[in-house]
Structures are given as C-alpha cells and as structure tokens.
Length: 317
Picture 1: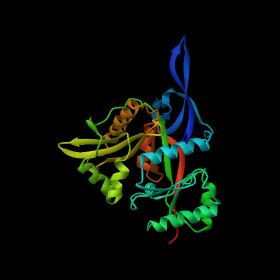
Picture 2: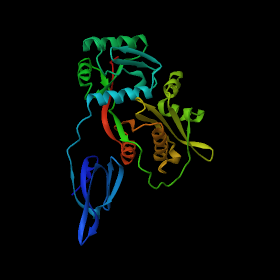
Picture 3: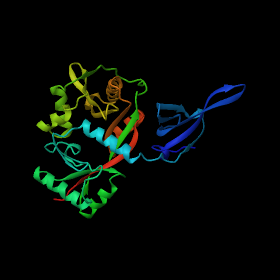
Picture 4: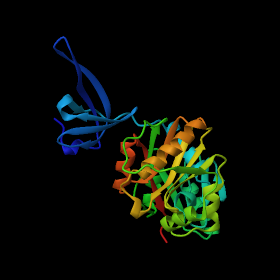
C-alpha cells in the first residue's frame, strides 16, 4: 500500500471502475502522487488531476522515473523561455547567450550556456566574466541540468556560488477543466500591464527599473492577467507564446495575501492557458524555485511535472 513518503513520486494505480456479471472492472492510471489521505489519493496525470477514493484502489505501486528529456528538448525549452523573458542587453559567445537587464531577476542577468561557445570551456567562462564586468555586473550563469554539468564542474573549480535549484515544469495543453473553487472571479487578459499590475510585480521582484518593463512587454504574443475584487487588484499573471508558437510560458502568478486560498491562482492559470491554446500552443511551462513548496503543490494539482532543473551560478567577488 502507499505511504506518505510516496507523495511526489510516479505511481501506477489499478482501480475498480465498475462491476460486470459479479466481477470487478479495472482501469489503470499513471501519474505523480500529489496527495494521499485516509479517503482519497490524487494523481497528476498527462490528462490532468485524477482523484481516486481509496476504497476503489485495488493495488498501487511506484514506477521507475521516466527517461530524462533529450538534450535537444532541454535546449528548445530553454530558448523558448529566453524568448519569453527577453533581456534588453544581449550578447553571444558562439551559441551561448549573454543577458543583462539592470540586475532585474537572475534569468535576465545571466549567461545561458547551451550549445558550443566556439572556444575551450575555461576561455568561455573567462569571456563571460569579462562581458559582465563591462556591464558593471557580477557574472552569473544559468546551468540547465544535466545538460550543463561540465560547465558546473568548471564553475565549482573557480569557487562560484549557487542559488537554490529552480524547477522548469511543463504540462500538455489544454488544461483539464478547473474543479470547484470557493470564489469565482473574472480574469481580464490585457496586452499591457496596468500600473497596479506593475506595482505587484515590483513588490515581488524588489523594484521595477526600465529594463524590467522591456523584459515584461517585449514579446510579440503576451497577455497580462488582472483579477479585481471591489475595484482592487487581487491577482495577477503573465502569459507568453514563444518557441515557434509551441510553448505557453507562465510567470508572475501572484495572489495578494488577503485573497489567497480561494482558487484565484488556478483561475488565472486556466485563463492564460485557454488564451495560449487559442494561439496554437501545445504545452505550457513555468519556472519555480524548488523550495517554494506551496507553489510546487499548486502546479502539481494542475498537472505540471518537472522537465529539468537549473542552477543560477554566481561568480565570487
């Protein structure tokens, strides 16, 4: 039988779905176990969340982890994510990307070492350090794992630090219909953020320099979600379609404290997902810090699973 330590792992469940001629009928479901209680278990499956009464479970067991995504799949998703969060100051080092945005967010102020830097690895890291020194910034490099493991080893030798791991999570579109929520809200999708929306983003990210406005708006297909209650903005979100129209990127999903635990974040995500589908996106992605357990749990319930992980490496002073 399943135990609490199985939560977060992929499992297969054989469940009873009916009776025919006195014999039970079974159906199998495969997914990530996101919740286990005395009465129910919930799986995040490829078709969306599935809630199964424990009384209907015939047997359940863990399955081996799925095969890691190919290097090409990681590169394609990382490039789509870069398009969705475009730094205004950019450079190239062979295939590597160099990005700067007045220090606003790690993603927009770090090198992305995917592909061939057109020189030996130690020389490439030297060039990254030099480029960021010219920008007046401490050098940072995002290392998608395991793709950029050799880069990480070089940075370890140089004494670079590391920020907490970030999960790059994905799910197929369209999302399954949302479940019951304690509050039903109108989610407005606009082509530009309101000043109130920008104020929420500034509070979350520690300010809003001019470069930040470029990062947020300089995408061809972008929508900003606003949820108002009694005239006050209580929830926000941002969606982009990039990667040759394949990927919906979700970012800055935020619910103000007084309006939390009412399902508003899920409603914002569903509204942006519906827009993404209307623009032809087949999958959604988001980036969430691994230690943000509340957000990770929410995304699991919506069907998101981890595609790969990256570390933001920081050069020593």
